Image (tube, rainbow, N blue to C red):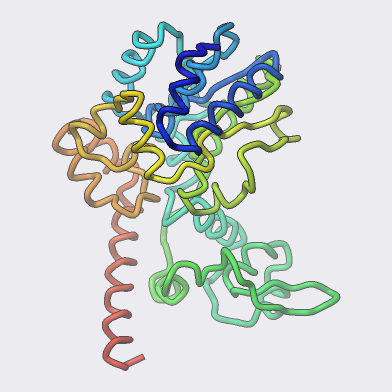
Length: 337
């Protein structure tokens, strides 16, 4: 380990940063085959800097999943990172690219979880009915999880129907009312995440027989992804290796402290384009997708054209939903609901 760099972590005066260095050192020393997932995003940049600084033996293998639909600025940033740290970042191809997944399964809408539940309902030819859960379970007996989401309730033989408190359709304001009034006439799916990211990562981990995988998830991100974890480390039976999240406890202020102290530079997506995130290009899950599309059109016009062709139906449906929410909020404020 680079002792000088580790000692510098104390000079930051930020205990969260010091703690992340201490834990990263232990995790790398305690495992033989270590993989580090690189995305090209700002969180990933900090993770790479930490891991490279504590990996004196060079045991860590860095990899990036090419979804088949990526910013040129991200690709350029990967080259920059390789030169800066004198490392190789393996480029992993997807099982199916994002354009192929959307063509075969459907477009994403609102969030991964919402898309998954709507996909399940569509597979059972659900008619977007406003009926009690028990009634719908009789009509669609093999669609329990999605129906529970739709009804904001769950059912057990012991306790009957109970109200659901988390991750129900009510998590998205007026979504149920919108769908009932505007049933989708196109397939909705979250499969692009599965085939373009999750499956190729899982396969690479298996091929490498990895002991541990390192990712850049932060608890303060919120949402289902971070809510699935309670700490910076977890065992995974499905992956066959542990997962370590070095900056899991970093708040936005900790990120800024780290960037300023260690001189971490991010891709042009942040510094030139002005993007707040660098997930999948034009992903409809992004709550700021309208602003992102304007940026893509300005800086990477070919990607913009492709995004509209791939996700166009979701963009239109999302705009319609957001307009519906505005209308309902106005009515609610006026006391007309």
